[in-house]
Image 1 (cartoon, helix red, strand yellow):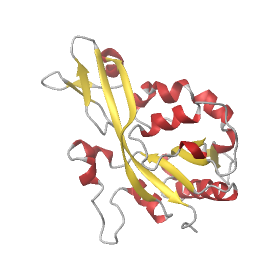
Image 2 (tube, helix red, strand yellow):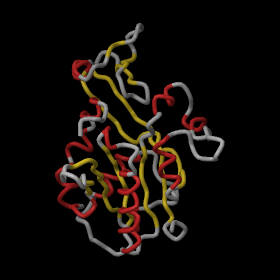
Image 3 (cartoon, rainbow, N blue to C red):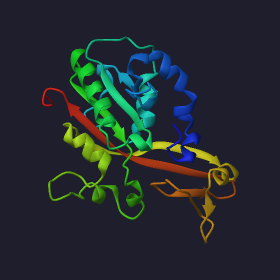
Amino acid sequence: MGIWPSFLAGHHKGIDHSETIDAEFADLQLMALCRKDGNVVGVAHAVALPNTAIPDVLPAEGWDWAIERALLQPRQRERGETPCILSITVLPRFQRAGIASALLLEYLERARQNGAINVIAPVRPILGATLLNMPTEVFLELRRPDGYHIDPWIRTHEKLGGKIAGICANSMRILAPIKRWQKWGAQLNETGDRLLVEGQIAPIRVLPNSGFAEYIEPNIWMMYSLELVK
């Protein structure tokens, strides 16, 4: 919807499989409509993972792992399959109106009706730029006086019953020519070994003598245990 950082268009794992995801998991692609005019104000994307695919410790590959595992074989549509929420996007002027929470609650209710035990999500923090200056483990310790996390998106999940289930340090990998990065607004730093671009939440490393730069984005695993979430 044009509000994500432009360089995420280089995340081929998501872009290349978007049509397949829409077809195989059509029931998990949601839209929020404005009551006044019926226009789309928010969208949500998710895949479903077979029960046998959920390890005790969620993998560091996060977003990329979820897509790969969901598309490994044709969907069986088994009862109790685990939804993995990939993204929820709300148009800026409709944010802070509870739309994201409503979409999350819709996923939880559908999962509960299908007999799921858990719902998982590799979450991209809104305050992700903070991660450029501190380890993710330290970032996760940053709490408000009321006990909720300082990050608004993590906090939204927590208020609906989601718990931090780990760090997916290698959630998204983007490898692209430096010229493509520059089209996305990136600039070389003073030493020429890093790129700087609006919206990054991890370093963008220039690969020597290749003309390419690599970005590996960390996300936060959130998990809802439906037996506990009412």
